Image (cartoon, rainbow, N blue to C red; front, side, top):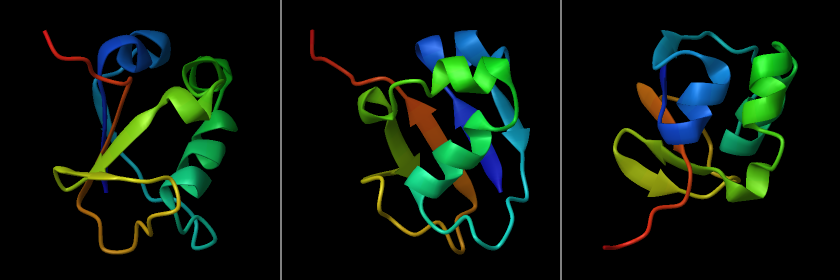
Length: 83
């Protein structure tokens, strides 16, 4: 699956996107964030406060307990505000 990073999540990780194949026990958005944290310091910094990170699967906003099976694209970004 393609994983996209936006705003300060991207800045902390140092990548705009990457293609990942997480292990079978990574089943939800929250699991994926925990798995990413274990990939290195930059990921740990980006996902240090997982409650402040928003996610979208295939362009649809989702909650952390949403299953990722079959996802083609998952995006992570900070909360958005209007303006």
